[in-house]
Image 1 (cartoon, rainbow over the protein chains, first blue to last red):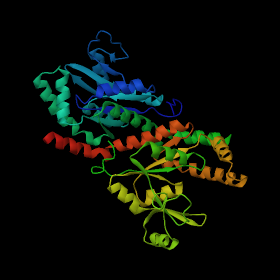
Image 2: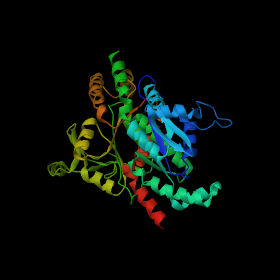
Image 3: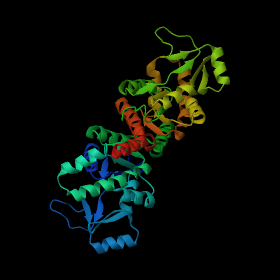
Image 4: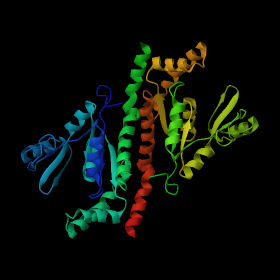
Length: 210
Length: 210
């Protein structure tokens, strides 16, 4: 059952985690190992950086365009981060669903909650760090954040983990490979769920009628 | 997340398929490859065969005992097959759930429906043959059934496949290894579902309080 573009809707996988849980590396590995899964491309108003491509890393747009999209309720979720606007359009999600493409969307808890509310579809996966001590260690080991930023991230983590309750799945990123395998298993299993495999029965019946 | 016996309930996986879909081989492979998954042991009134062990292959009991169990509503499902009685006790299921043991139960559609009604828990997986032609081929290739039996099995398959609609998952057994991997993915994914991983949040909080 590869992505059967003619027969079933694409599935949206929404992945959230507190900063330092290893979400970005896990999502990258997952996309690399599952050819039928694509990273969702968000809209962004920040400047394109060296090596980035429009339509691949982000859909880079002017702030005025982004504001218009907000006004026309074209976003499943959006947020302002350090003065720039980022968002996932409803059209991106519905077009993928309609064409049978499975999408992976890496977004924070607020964004995930907006998607659940505005798009009302999706498989929601929360990645947990093994514990607070390990989370703090990982944030410190990065060597990129000040003490103040680390403490703020730890405080945010507490807040975000309290949101894990409403997600469909929880995966602990204790051992990276195990966590990656669990994420891949969730993708495989969701593709086998009856609401996505009803077409198998039609196909079966059609074959039986021949 | 191996079977965490102290922290989460065991999950019941119920697998059905029409005769010839390859269910028994798939279930055997799954049990062999996943050490944390156990085959559910049914009660049976038939005579023990050479090489069989009571409590391993079946709990062999006298018909009178079985009838008493029926009267006391101790079965999640039971059926008469060729004059013998077979059944899965509610106690087997609830004890495994309570002690965090994941069970695999290989049962026909009628049995699965009884479990859904009487036990109201479980992950229901339906295995589909690729199509009717392949199903017929597999039944003939066995070389064990008469033409009459084959035709009856084909008729039953049609009836059983119409039941697939209410199952949680559907897995096509086209390629054996792919089907086995999908079943294993379903087991792994279900273990990550939030209703089974809530304990991770408690553990997390407990660790954070230290």
